[in-house]
Length: 184
Image (cartoon, rainbow, N blue to C red; front, side, top):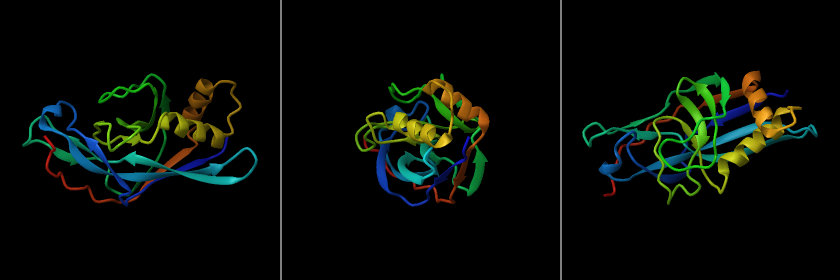
């Protein structure tokens, strides 16, 4: 198995629509920035490669307008991906792309909006992979291609990768964006 590195960017690259998780849909829709997640590794051919993915890095948490606040991992930090969670499903929107990578605790990498300017997802700190259709599936296919797994099925490969702890992730220090005013 080959090591895979991920770098969570600190510069805004776009925007996304979101609502305050877990019960703040009635508060309106907010605009938050998107960031890049750069994945690097080596293909079976020996060629080093990298790919950038657009992600939601921060989200809004709150049940009332007074409690709404921007959340997510802002400090510079490094982790080893702990596991592949095959049965995870997105809680804030409908998604056919199942599973998640566990960074630590409840901080995950999972499916996000195919079109972050139109589809409204909510997050409280998970990294959500944007741009589809099947953006998260494409992300996982890239991970599998870098891994060197010799398992026969994609499902088995993802499980093996998660157990092997070959994925390292680093977060650049970033400033949480301001809350902004909700769009009613």
